[in-house]
Image (tube, helix red, strand yellow):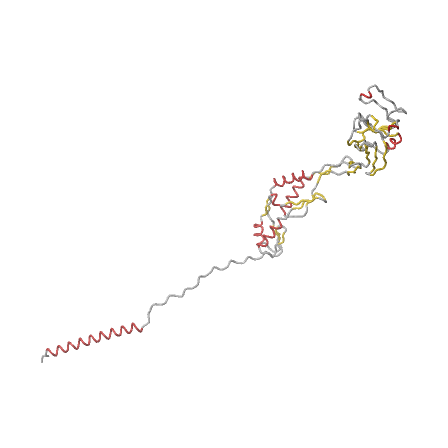
Length: 347
């Protein structure tokens, strides 16, 4: 029996309804699954802070007992050792000329340079107790120039013993040795001190020059204005005498002189002067105008001598010489010598 059209239509409707229900159920199930299932995307990893580089290693101290250029740097940090060595090298060199004169010389003034960084690098690698040299550059030309100037500064001429006059009183000047700096030895000592970082005082060496006159302790002072002669021994007044000095037209010369000629019982010879033009030599004896003693000084034709004319003593009565009483001239003659200073002043 054939199914009716109504029956076929109802069947188709039922099949469509079932298909729609299945599709709706699938959509609901899919939506529920999407609502209930967690996402499969993983969250990003947490951000870590930047990693700082490790601090540089702390330098180790220099081994104990190490010395650099004579400076103890053992146990010091390198920067401390560098400062200690630099300070030690900058110390001045002490030059001793004599007990009263000392000079100081800065190494930098001679252009000396110490390679301290190089020495400290060596010291950091040195074993305990090691002695590390300090390399130094020395400008030899500047050392020579300094020593030359130093020689001129310290040069001293020899001084002869003499007696100078201060007012009316003579003053003894002691003999002093002269000196010339030994330049080669001085330059060598300075360069060695710079190269070895030694600061021990350097005693300068000199070539000694001896004075010609070592002792001189007597002097004669003639006071022309008051017609007196003073005799000093070791700057002490021993005795004074009345004398006669030159006439106004033949004045006794003023100044510093010395005795250059001494004669017992001298001859008198006419000087080359108009007042003695017609005179003749006079032999020793009672009438000799020089008396018994002649002490010629370094002024031409002038001397200290005795006189038979004792009445002229105390006046300006001679032709330039200094007259004394005969016994006084003989006394003085025994106490002076060639080279005895004679000071003639106007007082």
